[in-house]
Image 1 (cartoon, rainbow, N blue to C red):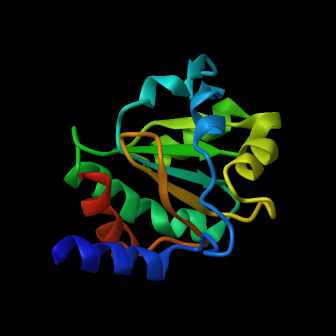
Image 2: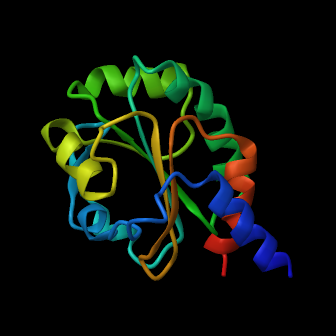
Length: 163
């Protein structure tokens, strides 16, 4: 019963249309993005782990507003669920400074010129921000949200990610 309620809650907060299938996570796992030190990192390193993948930008007020929720979630589920931030920015130094000053307490990568194609391939053809996907340990996208995350969104996703 508890899992059913969690699934219903996630369905209520998910912005993935029921008229179209959930996006395939392959574009995420196939991507190589730059870390805040401007070094390439293959996202395949996250394969087999439950994930919250959050696309954001420094100039996006809702993106900034949801960072504390993501920090709390990452801390609460450390070692069980990975939170990954993907900035659509080009400037690694600016992102590194932002992540330090704001602060962001989970790994942050830069999508650069791949940003729109990566988001589109993951179900966000409009390119709106923030955009978050919930990917289970089997690589299946189990939900997503276009717009600012709330604690209720993360709480609803956690039990499904931990199955």
